[in-house]
Image (cartoon, rainbow, N blue to C red; front, top):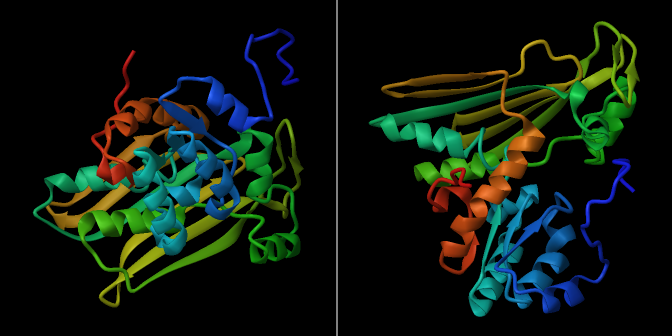
Length: 285
């Protein structure tokens, strides 16, 4: 039960193979996990059933970045079955990678790309608020970051998408995750965060090219952020400075991107693709 108080007429099953065998679908919309290794059996089952896949798995947005062997094997599997697989969403998938690449199209030269995303997570779902460490002490936050249980997944992939799209060879990708500490009490439907406790994360991904920091992605996602926004700055000729006031709604926009990208994926050649490989996903009725 999801608490709507009414039936939706949507069948739910735990037999994916049986479902795939009984439907004549072109594409599977997949949203179960962030780890490529964790969702790999699910992807393989869909591919073997002859389904194209659009997934919100963050590590699938550019799987070769951290899992080159898995990505290569999955790509071969896709080509063998004649299907296409894409990982996408708002972040990674759009605001901190694809949109920046699109904006670079007006530049004669690009020297550096900087993206900043500020998100007030107070109105977001409970799992996201937990994932950013809401309500923890500094010490608890540090331990869970070390265990990779508190963090946003996908900055590494976004750095890789930008670098690959611009033809840059990355020397190194680094990530840092620091707590945002509440200065006043913040109460949501799921957490009551006292001053001095963790309200969320300040996470930065950096791409080093030729010994210089050429890509900087800054994600500030916390309860009570005063001014949500997405900002992209391109140090280039000419330069670009774009701010989306209010930011891009993570849940709704991710849903839209997955649906709107489905047609592009069905039309694409077989294999693993990324958002930079496809025509823009546009809204259609």
